[in-house]
Length: 159
Image (cartoon, rainbow, N blue to C red; front, side, top):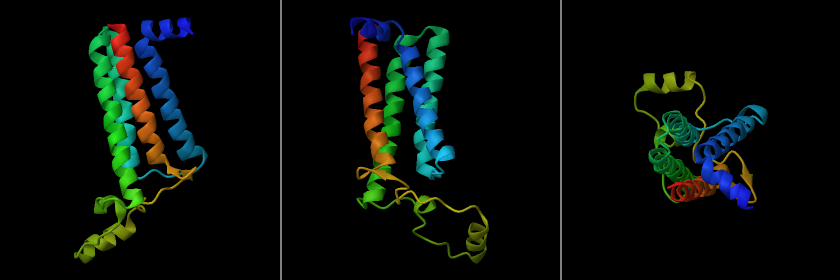
C-alpha cells in the first residue's frame, strides 16, 4: 500500500491522466458501444474532463505540477456541478434550458420548421439510463467529487 501511495505522490499528473483517459473511454463506450446518445449537458460535462486532461498535459510538459493540480480539481468540480444541475433537471427539482429540454417552441414558424428538419434534440431532463436508481449524471457528480478530492490530496501530498 505504501508503494501505491508513493507512486501517486511521485506521479500525480500521470495518475490523473490515466483516470481521465479511463473516464473518456467509459463515456465513449457508453455512447458508441451501447448507443446512448449524449445530450447537450452531457457534452458540457465532458468538456470539463477534456479541459482537465489538457491542463494535466500542460502541467506535465512544463513541470508546473503545483499549478496544474488545483486547476484540475476545479475543472472536476465544474463538471460535477453541471452533472448536479442535470440531475436536478432529471428529478424535476428545477426547469432546464429550452434548448436542451424541448420545453418551449418558438412563435416563428420558420424556426419551428428548421428545428424539425434538424437532428433530434436529446432531452437533458430525461435520463437515458439509470442504474440502481441513479442516472449517469448522478454518477458523474460522485465520480467528479472523488476525482476532485483525489486531486486535492495529490496536491497536498506533492507539495
